[in-house]
Image (cartoon, rainbow, N blue to C red; front, top):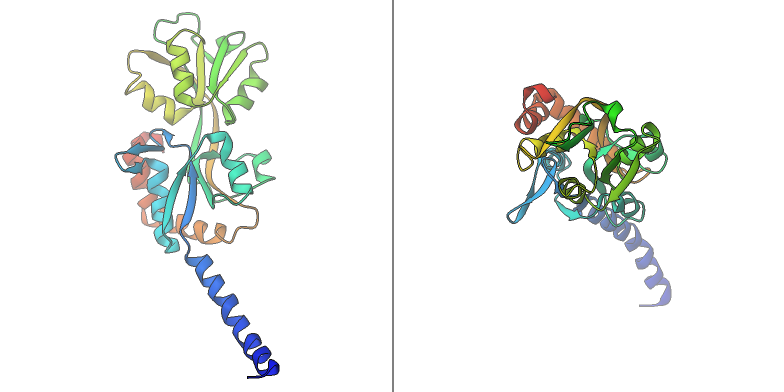
Length: 250
């Protein structure tokens, strides 16, 4: 076979190779980044991950006909990992915020969350959000709570910790006066392992939509939105939401 024939065969094979790479990319296992230490959204349950976020994305993955696996990481590392292509999506109660929308794309909202404060059960000095100013407030670094505390409680001392569990331990040890974090997570804590240890301060500080994070221009956004719309229409999303938060937490 001469050089010309080899070149012709190479040219004929090139489209097939490109198509094969595209098919492999579309069928590849999705790597989903999540802060898995924050029940009821995502947490380790035996040899697998459970929680509201995990169930929602499980249904989306079925709609996409894709296999997926969880890559656990600290919340602050999620967006950088997405931007560098180390993960394909963020599923971690990620608030849809303008600053984040500049650097990543979001799915349609699948839940509305918010921020709330908790204090030690014996704390009598904090009875409303206004009482938080001037206090030492703990939260998880890299979260929406950090921005909220800095902009709304100018005289507060902000204590940023690697995880919400660390923040709650600091509160329990008396190193902080309060913790501000996502409402469902703190409500779950207050009604389970933190029952009798903390008191929830009302009203909720802020309501924010939650979405799935994708790389800018990701082809996954449109099919993920279609899957979410189908889940909304047939009641699956409501069923999952009520399983974890009850009918009054939608």
